[in-house]
Image: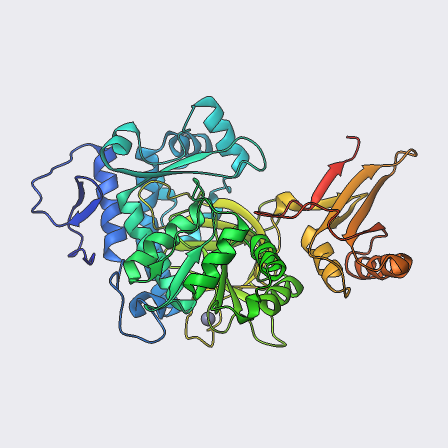
Length: 502
Ligand SMILES: [Zn+2]
């Protein structure tokens, strides 16, 4: 099934999950809500090229994967023109925002108009969800859409407050299969691979989107939910998957578990470690530790629940090269990516560091307009050696603005501390950052690490201190503990314990 809409003909949703274009459906929608939806779905369909995949060695969908910058911008503008009216007529959250800002949907038609629209942040969505429980009004589907053609509900992690939920339709599923197949293909996924996703299969977007794409690509999957690490290690040993998928913290934990069982992960069948859910590529020392442990390459997806269904970011064959900056691709025909400064939300020019903002152009249910995803990176739109002209996040992503540690005015990310810890030989995989207020009222940081040599505690502590001081310009205390003292990370790492007096 491919989605080439003929010209600008009307598009309609018929029955559960089928996006059809053309005028011969017999379904006529008169009101603005449905009319704007049809124009929007038509725009999505018009640009969904190569749904079934191509014979190209490098791209799943050459027409869009290898599009020129001009072609990418033209696609963005065509979708953007349909997006604002759709949001205005189908989301109370967006309608209120347009009215409050004194803007009409026609005021934001092209990508050059985006700056008129202040970024939408998580807090604004949380307030909407609290005022309009349980779903909020920031999506473009209602209860009727959900009961008629709902597919899955996903939830944000809630790590920074009230979880926000997102309902997606079968149209979104199809968008996702297409976008993720393109990204997974770029990462080297091919028919013949056997994938072992090691997640709980809860309402977290990441692996679900990949699951449907693997099915679409004809790639075999061994579902890895409901198992502990020992069981998963046995699955790898017996059923020989070529790709494993999990958080990078879990991959580290599982690799160590295998070693404890007398199995060598580096000698296993695994050729690719596919990570998501927390930064992996951008922290060189941790990525290298994983590469050594598993004897394989590491690739990652980057994204968030709010602007699914999509991959967001993905690796290509050139993402990691010795001596060069690691990067993650973004997919610009389905999303517009910008960076803004953390203080005023102003657009940051290419080449400068800023926080990620995404406008989603690939969803029926959640096409957010300038959503602040909030990860620091630097964008580069020059052509990648893989031939893609889609923008790249240089240095990948190493932390959300929410994660920033502010110690007496000195700002740093846990990832910087992690780099410092990883650079000292012999330290264990786990570490912890503890922030407290001392009796003099001064905020202090202690980093807790593990090392087997009890006779060298002072030397090790000094070495870790030096590495942290070199990277973060801050003096911290270091506690060297015997291995096994700190809890093992089994899903996402929780590195920071903030016990400061507010
Ligand atoms: Zn590339």
